[in-house]
Amino acid sequence: MAMLSDKEKLMMKLQSASFAMKEAELFLDTHPTCREGIEYFKKHKDLCNKLKAEYAEKYGPITTDQQTSDKKWSWVTSPFPWERSID
Amino acid sequence: MWQYEKKLQYPVKIKTPNPALARIIISQLGGASCKNIYSLYYYIKQNSLPVICVNRQACFLFTVLYKSDHNVLCKYTKYTQCVI
Image (tube, rainbow over all chains, first blue to last red; front, side, top):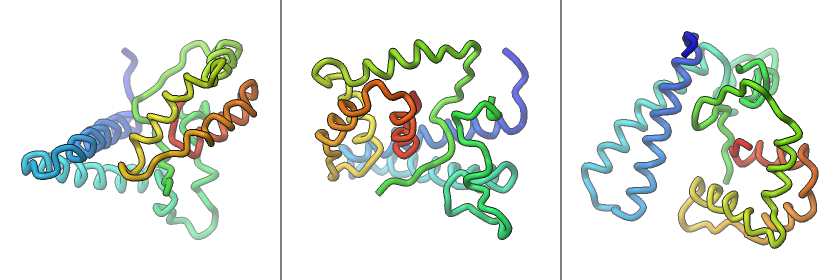
């Protein structure tokens, strides 16, 4: 396996945290009173938010409300996931 | 209703891109009676609120109209966070 860059490593952590959060969401839809499930969800949600902020600060916005630059709309100018520059 | 996140669910690395194959796969997503579009419908349903039902007819209509148009379907998936 090729060496992953820091950007890819951070993205992988973010992807795994948000996947865990999505799975917890689906579980809690059918088990709304499970306390452990809610704790699991909260833990991964906090991790996800932290990682999203970190990634957006370093490499560009993940959602439109993370836009920080005043000069240009980096949401559109930074690459989308299907564009080759991500590879 | 929709919030787009500029990230994939899993890391994807395409070694040998094959646009002809991609075109065939996407054209089959509609299927003869649009059955395969259910996969897209369920994916959208999973990622939105549980009480909101995605309009299946909108999915079918879109697929029937743009079944062979790779570019347009990719634009649609841009707003639904799908990767095809």
